[in-house]
Amino acid sequence: MSARPLLSLCIPTHNRAALLDPMLQSLCRQSVAFGDQLEIVVSDNASTDATRAVVEAASTVAPIRYFCNDENVGSRNFLLAVERASGEYAWVLGDDDLVLEGGLRSVTEALRAHGDVDYFYVNYFTAPVALRDRLIREGSTGWLPELGDCVAREPESRPLASWEHIFDLRTSNAAEVNTSILSSVFRREEWVRCAGLLRMSQAPMVSAADTSLDDLFPHVKILAHAMVGRAGYYIARPCALMGQGGQEWLSDWPAITITGMNQALLLYERLGVEPQRLRRLWRSHFVRAAEYMPLVGVHRGAPCMQGYAWGGYLWRSRHRLDVLAAVVARGLHPGTWLKTHLPAPLFAALRGAWRAAAQRAS
Image (cartoon, rainbow, N blue to C red):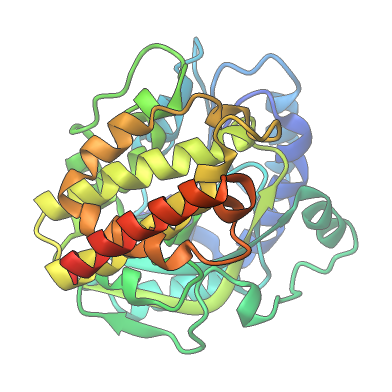
């Protein structure tokens, strides 16, 4: 390439050739129209399946920069995918995701129109991998979901005064709006500048409750350090589908999200996010945590919650227990799990204690 690409499409992968194949075929067909504005980077984490052959086949449609690690480097592979790219901006895509027809145009037009912006929030939606594969197979990747089915539900693209304004977008849970890296297109040099702050573990995760933000949501830590206080932009059109069903960690999601987002909010506090916005985020986070509390020790479908270390969670949240008390107090009403499963006197005592705490905090 004679000039630096505007956008690098970075795809980390490991032994998922069957998932990567349709995604890459679709992406290559779409990228041809953009020429040197785009590059596709595949970072292969020492796969032993047909990943190389899948990349070689797709590269007959559009050029692909392919890198294969000599050994499995774990989750650091997604960092390598960005390091190996050369574009001004980067968009990290999963091998089970799908860029919708028109998505690349929406993103590149926004990048060109707002060259002074370092961060772009890209709207997306989640759907089973089977739907993704059917859309690709039937040539229907231009299909768009209803806005209400997307993560962000604001219909108009708009500038964001700063990165932390992504938490003001209309979503089902503000604290989780950025849990997927798929939502983020970022200036690559800013990412690289802050990626060295990560302290990722060499060992595999044993318990999400005892795992750091660096390992649970490393992209959240990098982007928070890089982007707090910097201007952003919201792309309202849904540009991508995040495939569900191919994630090995999916059964651990309740523990991962409440532990990771708990630590993320503490990081936002340290980085100076406004107190009023933080309070809203803590409230959204505690609503989610309250949903998962009944899973402890009683739900076989969520093994990650068996014996979850709530003590550590509450200790990290100790300066926001007033918000937690208010959330739980509002949740203690007839029909809740607690009323159904606790003896009536215990439920009444617990409800009274929480409501008293909430009243003192208000």
